Image 1: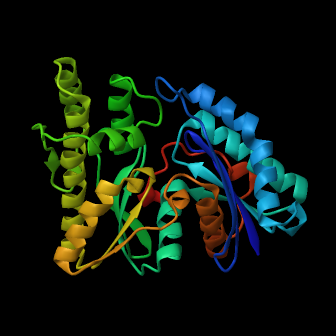
Image 2: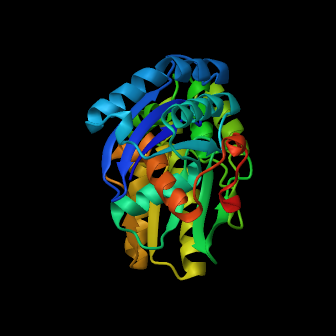
Length: 322
């Protein structure tokens, strides 16, 4: 069976096509970006609606198939921005009804985990999932996924974007902050906020903004930001691995593309005698349709198709509710 997956949780509209063996036939990603300011939900949703047909056509051409060859349609049902989720859900329902294909809804967070396991060969890893809204340490147990630790306020991706916006960078801001951090030479003390297995970023963001407004250089602040916040993420990930007796760590989410975060995770795993897994293709770390298609195949195999009446979006759908 071939599954077509649609991703539209936030700033990215993606269409991916994957077969039952886990072979990615195509993975088209069309992100909404700005040169100044952050993501505006309404504008991002308009972008998704405008790009939908083009992305679908590109994905089919790249996969060298036609819609008649598709056996299943999957879409990101949540969590995410409601206006953006609606576009993907509508497109998926339309394709399902027009082509008489079964429809499945996918938990976006679980999709990051499953595509990572597929492509890296990880068995039963602890997942450090770091994206815009979501910052979670996830593990499986008793037949379901559990959140071992998470952010208490904002996700690390939104944290990075908020600071980037404050210092005049565009959206997404994470890659620009990484570029500036490489040029930083001085570590500036920042709050380090780990509370048990959870972290908090709101106070650090306020502190960073105050330090920038007082005249401290953006390069040193970006360097210090990464060193501090990524250390917090690695600390809670290591503690989860120790608690669970787990020797595998899998990185997922757009922030996992950051080279410094990968390096810190690699050093920690080396010290523990553990294995680090990071998909080599950055297109499957960021939000994408291929991960939705693969998770859709797994969901269909496990529970069958979704009724159209049940295909409503779930903006606040948690990983541990899947």
